[in-house]
Length: 294
Image (cartoon, rainbow, N blue to C red; front, side, top):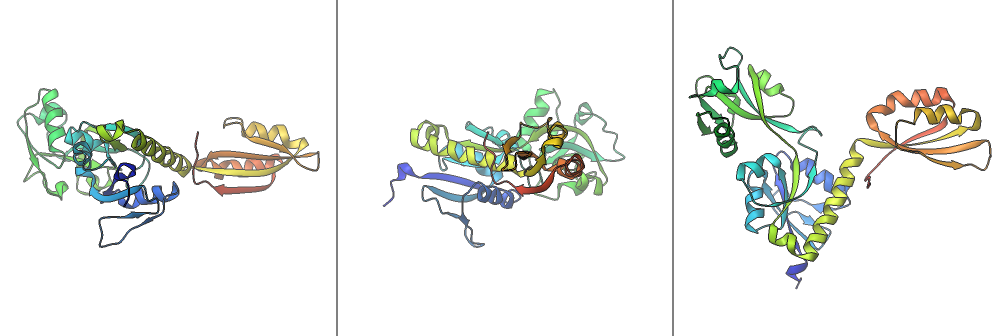
């Protein structure tokens, strides 16, 4: 029988963050088996027991100690007003790496132009608790109703405004809504139960998981470049790479040539490779990265 003290009870977000979270764990080196009919993914690491929980509920279960730790959005931590330990911020969402936003949105022809215009209005949202506290802090009294979904279709007949989650704003525009103001930006957070965090073994285990997840995330937008550079082109090539972290330079058997290895942002690769080639670099190899640990 396993020693329960040496087991981490980890909550993984079910829903929109599920696939991106599982991909991140895989890149971090964790092999996970997930059955479509089971809420209990199996880690190859026998010290981790996991459960799929909706992100909206995660902070409450972590705070209560049903889970030692879990991944959820900052927005849902705030919605639950949960008393937890934040281990790490992990900047990823359902579709990319930008933070998601909860925004006040209204029909394009609405007379509501600013937050103060919400006075006495009806607002539909899934983020009820946070929205109420936010409006109260601004001295605004409004009726905030819980929305069970399809929130974008509720104005103007069922609500004057909505507070809705968006990454790009495209869904809001498609429903003829415009954004009045952003209430909160949110990224994924790795959170822990306070009591579990005080346990030396569990804390070390959670810190190690966070280290590997952050390393995998840092590698998502970067690639490695290797190239050979003749002595006569060395300074020109190095000047192109000077804005990045110092590249690794090695001498080749042929003393008139160098090998250069550097990690760069993936979005710059298409611009810099032709310039490196023109500057005299050859044998240029781009390779993917799994983890970047500072």
